[in-house]
Length: 446
Image (cartoon, rainbow, N blue to C red; front, side):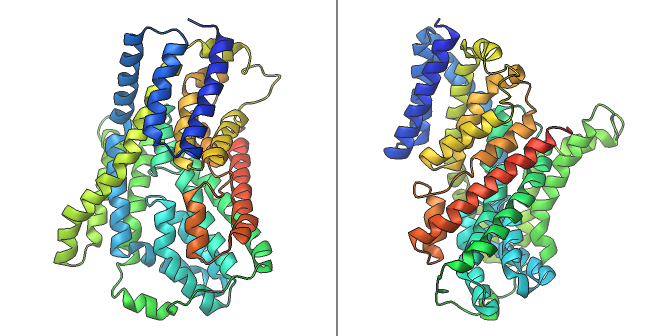
């Protein structure tokens, strides 16, 4: 087998290949990650049959941990989208904050909605309401769009059950409850920082509000929206259950042993909690037609959406398994782990930010970075849950033309590319940096 130094050089080459093939040539990430895992294993001197064995173990082991969770979460998010629950939650937040602070309301709504719903889908769902509020409150469309987009972005990259941070938690063996807690702690100031940036900079750039319905007309067109309580329940319920399990698992055993503690641990298991959340989302269904569509069409659509994430995540697990038996681990323990370098949490943030900026996909950046970091965690002495959050923070830096979300935000908001770069791209840099700083500060107290 090659030396640790050569293994590191080969890893850098492998990352470069991943960036070029997924970014420049748009090759499917599953093909790239699987191919790179096999090639890297052979290049460092593993026997061919051993490489294939490790690839299969890594793929299967990863999906065993998070496969059902991702599928249940995707179906739940799609149900929230189809039933109008996202608009119901936004309307509730708007009533709380007030129309005069509509950009802040959309930023806060984005933070909540994107926990189970992909950020680009969330933006498309909420954009008509965003436009109506921009017109009604006479707020710049640039401010409104960036406020909503960055609110969605924060939890999309840092809070499970969104697939990216969920996959990273599985790869790093992080407690999902702690990832949710730390992810929320980091995402709120990060989203607010991006909102504040948008309110100070966005007004300098003109962007006409696209022709849109009024706020009241839009709400009326949807008919009877689900109640706010039922809309929030599928999101808040599973999060509280998972956090409860994390508390029950503490060494101090605050819930005791057996009995109540066992129940809390069972229903707080992410698989069980997300299945409960999925069924809670079905309480939003109001007609026989919706029930029929939810149990067939919507579920099928959710499984299809989850499939792509699952295969990419599994391929990332294959690469991680290969890396775990490479000489890289021992080399890092003598070089990168040197306290004089002071890399700490900055290393996963830097890798994730570089991957995100180079190839565009936040999910690919998160999965690839967590795969690279997995065998190095014990050596570097990093906190698993905080590392997941830091990787998610890096995956926001920066969104530009190679990111599909950049185009969703700019095109649906009628922003020209130059304005989108100046305000939205810069806001994602601010957001990711603030999220990293919050996680870094947390590392001194956890």
